[in-house]
Length: 139
Image (cartoon, rainbow, N blue to C red):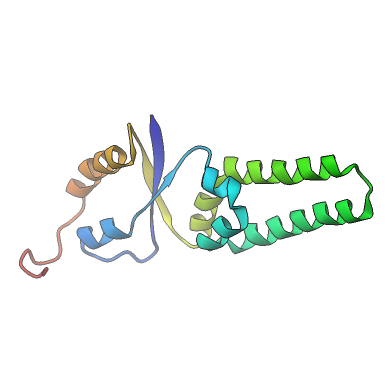
């Protein structure tokens, strides 16, 4: 079972379909992409402060490696641990970043896969939203 939190940007459009298109679904759980490509992943999601923290921590690990205060195996283990920590906390970092930018958490949804979660959320959320755009106005 997968679970996602659903977030809406600040100042959403009035039309429910336009609002639905701008929602962000953040998956809970470990992210291999974030663990393997941490700096790229952080930049791709515009997480500037976590990126700065990541660079500072990796810089400290490299400084310890250069000064040879610890065996190189320990510094390698610390770097691997840092990547695993980013992978474990990726969804929390993304939710925190969205919250800092003013996004609203609309709720949580669970399902067998991402499509099932989206369908369940929209089945519950769309009927509660007002229809403001003209039916024939879309092309």
